[in-house]
Image (cartoon, one colour):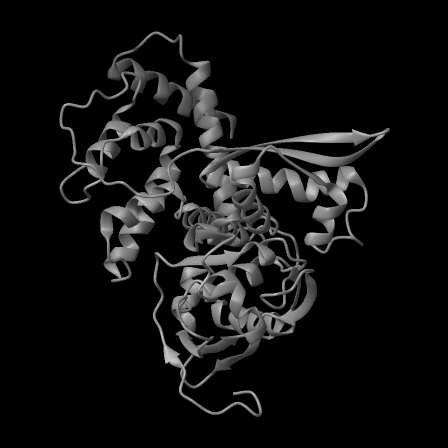
Length: 409
């Protein structure tokens, strides 16, 4: 607890998979830079505050639940959360706002995000309280704001996707939106980095736009504009893919499925619209199954069912639909593939001695097996056109061959 603050117990909270954030546009347009995992943690913590409170309260949340919500590696999650907490406390936010109700001009405010963050080793929890100066930006927000779900934000791999998505949500009603590249650099605090347009495009805009188009409710097209011979502005064209609200409709058992669907797509449709899962057979589900690869679809369903089995889901059909829309299983799928690659690496590591570079006993055996298989394949190909012979003929030829070999000795 910070010095000078009256001690009071922190409010213990549990992870809510359907947590949302309400954020005023002043912060959306603010100037700050957060690495990918710090942004995930900020969004996760912000999504679990009581948004109608008179002021920020102290909260306590289990590290394990927070790490799972953020899709962190299970083996390093405690170390990572401890480091993120320390770094987040030091980060600054710079934004413009009307400091008083009667203000005619906006003022610039620099503040930290948190009054304090404490990593409690005894209870394995994070205790935190947001900075009082940003209360008007996150609490009792009634106008000029965006609202978004936390969980889909955890799947982004590009550190700029979250920031750009927030801006896109603000610009949706006033698009096409033209903005200078220098202004974007300033917002993202990249004025000393990616100074060349080509670098800013390659490392910031392209990966962020790609993720937003693939994993959010928006389709975004960006056109670079020139002033003279140099690119100086972007123009954003924004289209919402599906309605943000979730509308669960009665299932129509007579719906006609696309004729080009494969068996696994029909089975997935049958599973998702079953009484057990209760998804509506609407246009979203048809399009989703048509466009999504089998591995990603299976991962999204498996991840959602795992969360329900752990008691973390209250409204199952709504959550399952969000898991599909937000591709919640993306990191889950990547983790499984990484584990498979690691397992393959471990198997390969057994074949070569790291010190001598020579084959181990297992490596020599694998080499001999491969050579034997190659010889078998060669023999098969060389003798594909050989006429079949009886057993007696084969034995006679074999005995003759063995006799000849013995005579040569």
